[in-house]
Amino acid sequence: MFADRRDAGRHLAQRLLALAPDRPVVAPDLPVVVALARGGVPVGFEVARALAAPLDVLVVRKLGAPGNPELGVGAIAEGGAAVLDVAAVTRVGMSQTALDAIMAREGEELLRRVERYREGRARIDVRGRTVIVVDDGLATGLSALAAVRALRADAAARIVVAVPVGARESVAMVAAESDEVVCHTIPRQLVAVGRWYGDFAPVSDAEVLELLAGGRGLDAPPG
Picture 1: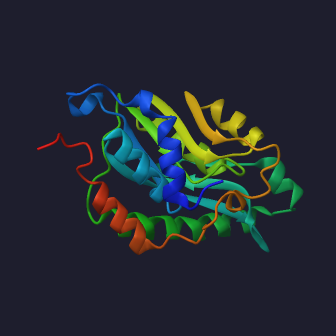
Picture 2 (picture 1 turned 180 degrees about the vertical axis):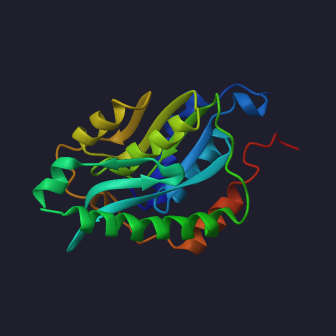
């Protein structure tokens, strides 16, 4: 379906052009594109460029099941927002001790990435603004849901979750807590997000930093 994440971002951006206000506008009237690190950053970069909107990053960490880290049972985000799939935790027989250990480990990695990606810069103030949360796909939807809760706590006025591909049930779950979900492709059976990309190689810290640097000033007026 998509060549890579940046190709997916260009396709997704076409569904979001209505959110780009007519120029000229002042910063508070612009939507803010918040990309979930790491996979959402290449997608979000293309969305921000198409909308001439500011680009920021939000670090979210999936909580994986013991012995099967790809099976998400929850997620945590910057600011302390968290989502836990109690049914999944019960189904895999995860103890509270194991859950606490995973949350501690992922919390440490979250803080490392925040420090690495922000380089001392403050997050863009989203109070009273429209925020477009971008990721490379919705599998369980738990990471996006944690991001929505984090941005609600930051007093965002309107939260739009935008992804190239997502599972139908996950789109519905995220839609229940966001203001809108824009999903380019909702397949009959998702199987895995990576299946819908020709190139789904892991995104490195270096690529995140390069795209964030390139995204600064995307909302600046021409000339």
